[in-house]
Image (tube, rainbow, N blue to C red; front, side):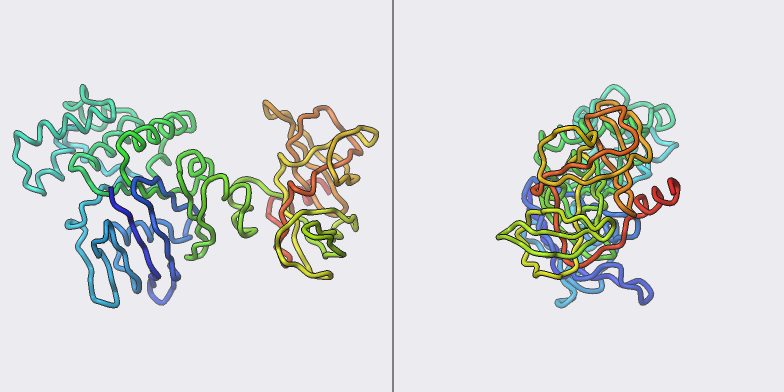
Length: 375
C-alpha cells in the first residue's frame, strides 16, 4: 500500500481560509486520523485527498503519483485516483440490494459481470455480511449498513481507504464494537487509511498516529500516547481528554524543575519541564484529572505538591470517584481512588505529572461553569 504525502495544503472558501499550510506524510499501511472539532478543516483535507475539493494551494501525492500540484497545474479527477471512501451517511441506494450497491463502482470501472460476483462476495465476506447480499439497506441494522458502505469502498481494491466520521451514526455500544472490528480489519488488510473524527476516544483507540487540527492548522502529529501524554499545545491537551489549566508565574527553577506561583490561590507548585522558561514569565500548568489525588488534610500520600482545597461536588463513576474541588478562586476536576470525601481536602500531584506551557491560556468553559454553579 502506498505512502500519502500532503504538502503546504491551503484552501479558501469565499475569502475565508479553511486550510493553512497543512503538511503531513502518511506511512504505508498506517491508520492515520485527522482529529478536531467541527470546522477545523479535517473533512476538507480528506476531500482534497479524495478529489472532491480542489485546494487553493499545495500538492498531494499517493505512492509517488501526483494527485494535486497547484504550482504545476496538476489535478487528477477523483475517478482516476482509485481511492475508497466511506461517508458519514453511508450513501447506500435504498432501492438496490446490497449486492447491487457494491456493483455500482465496479460498473463504473467496467468490470465484467462474472468477475463482479466474485469481487462482491469477497468484499462482503471481509466484513462478515456475505449471506446478506440480497437484502436491501432498510432491512439491515445501522452497524450492518456501515459495514456494507465499507465493503463497497473495498470492492475494487483501492490503494488508500478514506473514512469520514463513519461511526458517528451508531449508538455508543455499537460504536465501540465497530471500532474494534474496524481496527482488526484494517490491520488484516494492511491498507493505508485516513480517518476523520471529532471523537477523541475513537482516535486514540484506532490510530497509529493522530493529527490534531484547529482553525485550519495542524497543531500536533504523534502517536496516541504522545498526543495524550505530551500534548504540544494547550489546545491539544484541552481537546484530547480532560485537563485542568492553572495560570501563574515562574518564581524560580532548578534545572528542569520550575516553581510556579498560581494565580488562583497564591500557592507555589513544582513542575518538571524541558521548556526554556525564564523567571517571572507567565505560564500555564496543565494537569489531567486522573493525575491528581485528593486526601483528607491529615492523610498521607506520595506526591511532591500538596494544596489545600474544598470539595464542591462528588460522584461515583464506576472505577473511580469524580470530584470538583475549589482551589482558591478556581475549580479543579479530579478523578480519585478515594471516595466519600467532603469539606476540606488536600490536592496532591507529582511534579512530573503536570505540563508547563509558556503564556497564560483561557480557562476552559467547564472550569468556569463549575465555579458559577457552585459559587
